[in-house]
Image (tube, rainbow, N blue to C red):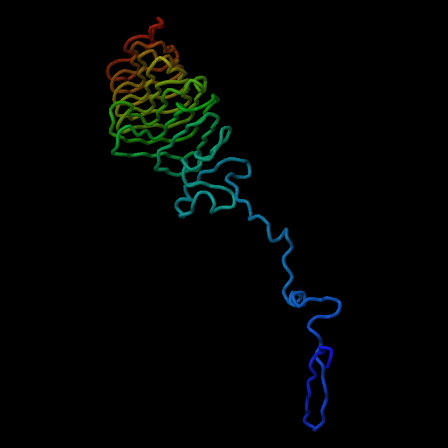
Length: 311
């Protein structure tokens, strides 16, 4: 033929009859492509909004916006904090690492064998009854709890409440269960409040403040190998109110080298040396303190500002 028409197919049927069949063209005159025909056989694609939907968001906080630390999570072998739909951390350190200024970290009951560092102002670390930070080390200079604002770029406040702290580290100087070194100049006005703590060190002193404005409230510091409480240096200031400093091997309170806290309404009892030892300091020891049963006497020395220490 002159025209290129589809080849006819001769078909012989079982009954002996024949028929001529002409197959349909692969491409119609209207331009329907083979690709389009093939595409019609594929399943329909998902809507774009479904295909690109984000995975479920996992929160680092509870519904109130608090960072929660729960020792049960560590016992279950879960990771921080993505193993739970609402964040719970297995260590205090992990929660503090991500909590920004202005945050509250809640610590559930349990024993946390870790060193805890608070390094930025604006943090509240609030513990339930029974929450214990226990740190025992053969390395020197390892406090269990440190509030270190030496590199802070701004001021604010820090509150730590409710923790029990147990400590052992074989250093001589700066051997504290709870340690507050001098803050940066930018954070020099930061107020650190330690409230309702129970502190003991089998190797050193309970609380060491070497700078900054630190207030200890309604806390017990006891059975320490050295002093119960030490304020050391000219920038160490603040107050001790409603606390008990008892059964420490040396002094209940040691103030020296220009430190200037006020000791008010507290019990300094049954310590091995003095209830309070005051050496070249500028603080005050109010008459409302109970000072008795100490091995060498109630008070040694006086503050340089002339305030007489009451026994």
